[in-house]
Length: 429
View 1 (cartoon, rainbow, N blue to C red):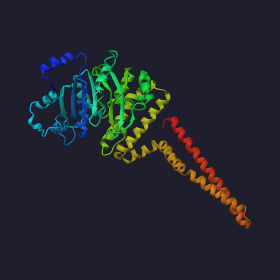
View 2 (cartoon, one colour; view 1 turned 45 degrees about the vertical axis):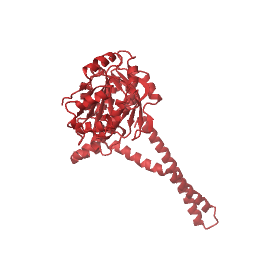
View 3 (cartoon, rainbow, N blue to C red; view 1 turned 90 degrees about the horizontal axis):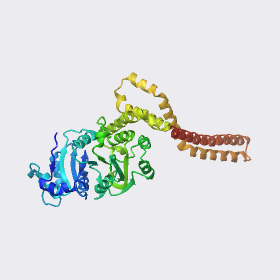
View 4 (cartoon, rainbow, N blue to C red; view 1 turned 90 degrees about the vertical axis):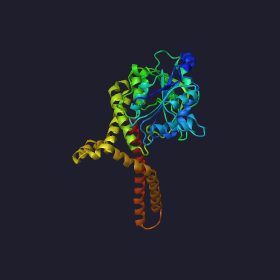
């Protein structure tokens, strides 16, 4: 579906935009939603409040059920654009009159469009298309359930970006992980160690860290649009993961990722990438399959770029994830012979896991085994020191042996479990 844009009138462009073009290049802020439209007004508000004077705002929903384009416009008109007016009826606006009214009301918004996909296409395809039609020199992606931290975010990012060398194409910044209400800060995504990795500008070092996890916050990252021409576009073989895959590609190709140590983005906890899969089994499956493909495409062919230890961890993580996906989504569709073959081919793996579970269960009770052994030993000593019949002395001796064996067993279990845990740590399990 072709998206139609609405712009400031020509007179305004001549008197204002042309004069500001060199100072403030156009920044495209793309706000996307899918099943989280209730947060959309808060996200859009954070864009409208920006002091930056040259913004293109694109708001798009990726096929949320029972959420039409008209419903999106009505929600934003009532809760954001014209909030405070007694009554807002978007049906009265025809031929772009709503968009023109918004442009007149907000001086910093120069271009605007609303879009809704008829069917869900996935985050990557959604962003790839919206990015391709954006007109800004710079592009930012904003999820509907997150928001920009304050009114100076965009102007501070652009002021810094414009001082960087011509071959600077990506600038990231600090992101805050907040609670569900975006009121309480849990932690900053980038700690001091991760900041140092970014500030080192060492692509190889950044790539290796990215093979562990996506430590660069997609939230709070701004791109020059031309980066997608120079280093390649988003890969729409993936469904949900657009950031991690792209950062791996960039760092592998030697792109310099710049960092501004400034909190710019408020990220709401509870997304798929944080392991929250409540009511979203399909999304979690997409995420796991994306992660597997990511390792196949962006990591395994480039193990020579990481340390041998990290390469071993990647291969092990890949095997474990592939096995997990097969068991959860594919095994039930296989015939009996294929299921038996799978079990035998993974006998070593499951043998190790069963042993770990057994030792782990024993470890939880090892302290009680030692305590019980101590009690039995004490009872044996008391029997040995009593002046009763010889049978009591024999019983005491047996108790002493049982007590000593129990204490020894508890200590051995503790030591074995520590060895197992250390071995898993060394092997990257």
